[in-house]
Length: 490
Picture 1: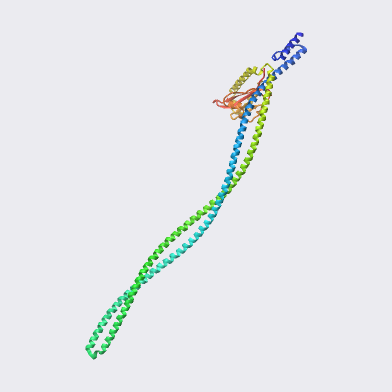
Picture 2: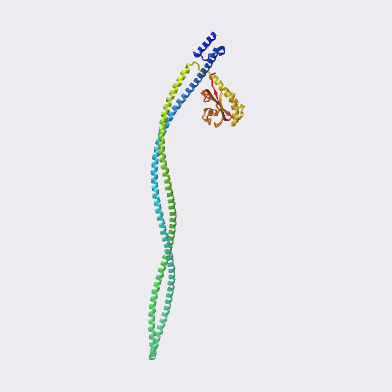
């Protein structure tokens, strides 16, 4: 009994001095000492388990601290860059606001000019309509003048005909007068012969002489009248000739006037047509101006809304400045927490360093074997179960549940399709899609993934995540299979 108690005391002393792998072997002890040895053995295992977990946590804290330090450094740089970008955005917004204000002024000025153009167009359209009415009236007057000139031309032609007829009549009268003159000459000759014969007859021819004298006197008077008539007829002929010449000139002038009037008429018709086109264009211009005024109203409204939005953007930018400043302060606070976390990590290291055993390092070879065995088992599983290449939840569930239930070290197992969707997961996955996880992205590249040791959210114990790609018959990656395995110091 003393020997057993002495041996037990030596072993417990050895464990107390830091030799945590000292084997107690409770079966070597009897009665009450045996139960104490069993309790001490259990305590020893718990201490080793806690040391191992503390070393895992310490390692995880170191890794997390480094990551936090890097993230904080990047976050500070990003915050400073965002702050600079925010200032640039503020300056750009101020310039934009100034440009919008200037655009509003220009738009208002253009709208005023367009309104003035609209008034000019209205005045021009009124003037054009009035001018068209005047031209139409003048065109009617020209048509009437042409009709009158044509009537004058007709009357002139008729007068010419009458004048020619009168000229012909005077010509005939002249010929008759010539006949009368011939009669006169013969009468005068007869009168002379009668006078000669009456002189030869003496007193017997005295009466005949008187008759001859009367005939002579009558012939002379007739000759004188004929001469006067001839003179008058000559004057009439001269006047008729002048009238004919004047009528010809008048006829020529009338013809020229008619031609010029026709030209004027054609010109006025073209002007009237042109005014119609001008009026049409003016109406089109007014429509465009009205459309522009509507667009200017829309533009002014848009610019006004842009100005309001610019003001809102300025307010939002100011709010962003405030948030960035707050974020910067929070980052500084997190930096302080990071320092505290480093101090905690150092304290934890100091605590675990008192233990001369590095259980994490000692377990590495065992962990490597576990990981290698699991990767090999998963590879064999895929090869022996072609159904895992297909997206069939029932088939995946049946296969994976058998694997999980037959493993002591596996805590979870799952499969994903090529898009990161979970086909099946036991226990159910805590995320909807795996594309946010490194293990999925690395395996989709064809690389087996092995994580560092971390504390499981499921078992609250140290564990690792392993994943490998699933290939189809053509060696194309169609998905990923992954598992979490528990890590223990022994």
